[in-house]
Image (cartoon, rainbow, N blue to C red; front, side, top):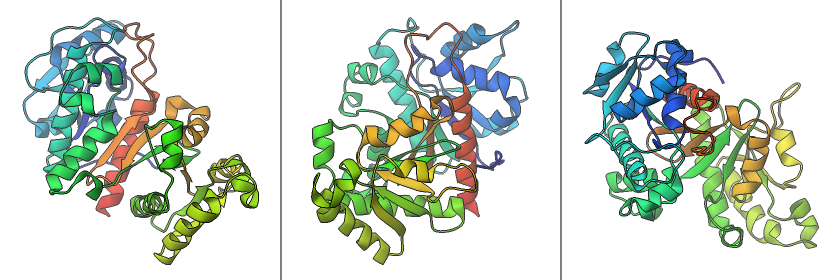
Length: 353
């Protein structure tokens, strides 16, 4: 990953759940990395951000400057936090508690920022964490979405005039050492196994190849993990590798993708880890949520970045949740959010080349 890139359009950071650590890590990011946050703004609630700024302040809190248009973020003076109020001000909520008020406002901010990105007003969207219980408690339309990814996919599909299945997306988790993309996201393990189909695996490879080519400047070397222990051991522990995953890889290769596997899932991540002279692979396709996320998070959740591949705009997010247990204490680590901002700039810059 390279250094941050200056963008011609502003970058929006959605505030996340006001009862969680989202507002405070945003305030910390502006206070600790002012230069790297220039040209960005918070899509959220002014008072919630003022509360967060006061919480994390060592001495005087950084001033929160209310803006009325995203373009104003490009001219905001240093040492302040630009916030665009999304709709009516939010009622104050206590830290660390599930709240329909906070869930509705967090969902509203995501919708607003995504629409701005779809309309070409902003360069990219960085989303601070929301709480899935609060989002569900907010009621329609947010109770029908498990999280950010599904909200963004639905909005982008509607904007393009497509059915939901006409705009497939995938989650990629990345840090400085490893990238992994998931075939399925928020499903029970039983349903996730059922979701491993030839079409889904091939589509995941294609989406990954399309997303990473401009970033790497070449075709990514894609390793595809098996589903079963030891990638099925020739069919002894399951035949999905032979009947589903292998044919999907072969079809992707015929389409021009540099994909290989299926590789044993207990060792393939080590071959893709950026260590020593260089990794063998650029990214690993994992068959289900925990298979792919455990290796990335083990290497350091504080530096992980979540990217949604397949959208018509760049969206990144920190690789952690709302952390209700520490919210309001001013101790949350902003590293993952700052990494998400940096990666968003890099991906937008690569797309413009």
